[in-house]
Amino acid sequence: MPVVRLCAVLLCLSCSCKSPTSSVPDAGTPVERGTDLRSSLTTLFPEYRGVQLTAGRAAMTRTSGPATQADLDKALEAAKQSGFTGDPPTRAPFVMEQRLEGSTLHQEVRMPLSEEELSRILAAPSAMSTEALAHWMPKVAPKLHEEFDFEIVWMAKDDARADFLLWQVADGAQINGWKYDALPSGFQLERVDGGPVQASNEFSVTLRNAQLGSIIDLDRKRQHAKLRYRLVTFERR
Image (cartoon, rainbow, N blue to C red; front, side, top):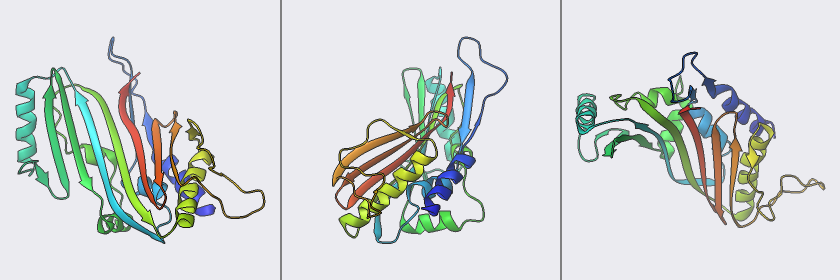
């Protein structure tokens, strides 16, 4: 399917990876990666006919440390200065959570993905990058780890439609470098007779791309499916 290959190629091209020349002693070499909301969406949801979106979200999570209560207070105040108010702090469409566990600061900024929001992502003149999304989280301590999470949940009109949509995502990912942990029983990547592909009515499968630092999770229960794309945007190696 040309559209599958195109969407997967777009994600590979948009997912940048860079390793700074300088390293932090005894902490490993920092590795940074990035993508954008549109590329993530078209990878998990390249074909939306015959499907109803029931839930979705995009989120960035970060851990930093060592951090103290003073650092948490500073981060909470910075979020307030950026317009986040209420409990949890919200600046529509974004919601932020920040907490301290021991000497590690945990931060998350997320946005719900409705059908209207997906339409805006596709129609926007420029796609929101993971870097732009992470920018909302105040930086008050050395960054340890950062990850992007894009998830959608949909219901297909029937089993056959769900079969095709899940095959479409899996086939495009496999062509462009993602590898299966294990292929579910009954999941067909191709039919030698040219007939419609089929997949098990219930399964979970994970695809990994070590080079990109990304993971795709597919979970299905008949017409219902949850698709999740994760990208490590910062780590130390």
